[in-house]
Amino acid sequence: MPLLQLRGGEVDGLALHYLVEGRGPAVILVHGLGGFAESWRHNVAALADRATVYSLDLPGFGRSAKPGTRYRLAYFARALHGFVEALRLPHVSLVGHSLGSAVAVTYALTHPARVERLALLGAVVPGFGYQMSWASRLVAIPGVGEALSLLGCPSVYKAALARCFRLPVRREIDFLVDCHYAERTGALARAAYLATLRHVRADLVDHAPDYRRAMATLEAPLLLIHGRQDPVVPATHCANVADGVPRARARWVDECGHFPQIEQPEVVNGWLSQFLVGRPAPR
Image 1 (tube, helix red, strand yellow):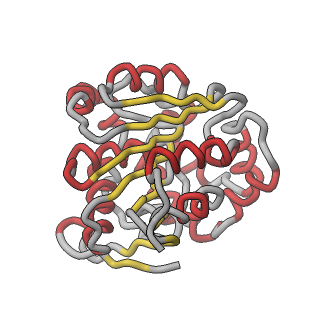
Image 2 (spheres, one colour):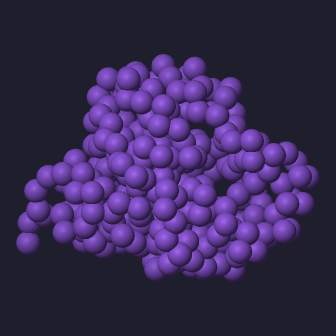
């Protein structure tokens, strides 16, 4: 797994781990809260036939650095921009999942000339009425989150994650928890997770009107892919985004929860390939 060290500004010296595969136009996969680069393993090969596919660990997650900082959406977007700049990518298409969708949206709004297309799966999009769950709000309370995090163990994480799927598959749940477990659940990782929950609330609540106005100006084509039975991000949220963004189109996945790219990979990969890179890359 390559390691990239960013230069300049707030992210100077920040180390990001990532995976890369394929040849063609650049596509960057952005995971959600608690996710990591390898969680896209069912999707990379399908896109790599027609694109250069990058999947990265956002700061605070996976095997990337976990600094003590304010984990706002703008911070993640600055790290993503540093990644794009360091790799000298003139234009990119972004695929975001869950909170990674909010990161992708923030990047597209702050660097519109660099983003060609946006595909968002199980998306959290600020400005369209998304409400954090009661469990997330509880964990975000200072002191409470730290105490609860000490109770974390593989079986607890797997039980919580299984609730996000329409029909949980044991091998998928095991992989999403067990992969790089020590690095993803150590003290620094737990602190980054809690900081993200706490800090993005300002974006989702306090700055919701600003995001709603900015999304009306989004020029990049937007594809929304959403599970009809998503228990984490309600389908109504996706419908509101589709109605409120001029160039947005929604596609619905039946019998699917919060992870359409894992629960229904063949369907989702077909839609992503068609939307992001409609023709094979030159050989």
